[in-house]
Length: 158
Image (cartoon, rainbow, N blue to C red):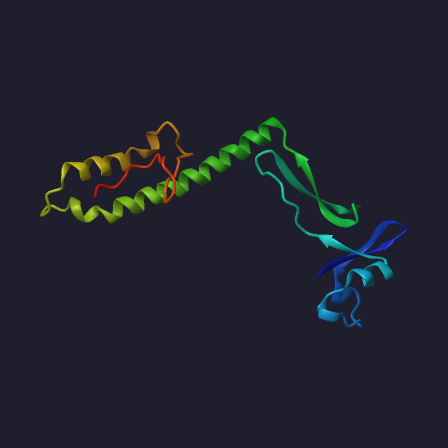
C-alpha cells in the first residue's frame, strides 16, 4: 500500500508501507486507519479517474487534498488537445470496427469460393460489411446485440 509520511501538514515522503516502516507488523498486512492517524501517515491515491476526452492527468509533487495524498492533478484539456483526444478515440474505435468487419467477412469467405453459388442476400450482406466505413455514423457505430433494437451493422441473413 502506498502511503505518505506527513510532517507540518505537508508530504515528507511517499512509498510502500512495508518499505517506509520495515519493522512494523501490520494486522491484515496493511496499516489501519487508526495506526495511520497515530503515526502521521496518509494513504496515497495513485490513480484518479478522469474523462480522457476533456481532461488529462498530470504527475505532480505529492499534495494533500481532503485527507488523501495525490500524485496527479486532473486538468482541463484545451480545445486542440480535446480535438486530438477525440481523433485518437475515433481512430481506436475505427480500428476495432475494421477488425470486427474483417472477422465477419472471414466467417463467410467460404461462400465466395468458385464452387459455391452465393445467394443474393449473402452478397448484399458481404457488400454492406465492405461498405461499413462509409456509414454516416462511422466510426461510432451502434453495436446492437441482445436486448437492443438498433444496430448500424448489417444483419447476417438467416
